[in-house]
Image 1 (cartoon, rainbow, N blue to C red):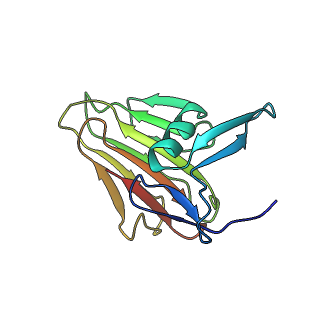
Image 2: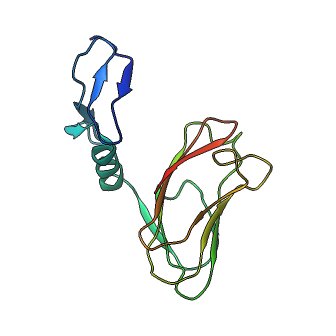
Length: 146
């Protein structure tokens, strides 16, 4: 089986190998060994990720951990803070988080030490349905967010 380095073309564009081979749809094994086709666009990846994620809803400040990959945060009664684990202990870890309420209270994502999220000390979600897909390389955290 060939291994393809890939590039993403546009925000929701197709994923193509550097040789031009279309990699927009791939088969991925699920936990029971079955194959699922997923669309390799940002929307397709998020849909697959959410469909296969363990979700928790938080209505108080919390620390991200290994119990879930999708964190819904309710700030209806006050601002909330989600604290990521240390980067050193989190290489390769992903989290998807969303502010699910329409209240004016902010949802702030932070780290427990001096590591950063996209070069900043915090990431703040201010609007209903605003989300962040967060990934760690073992040194810093990266976030794609709206």
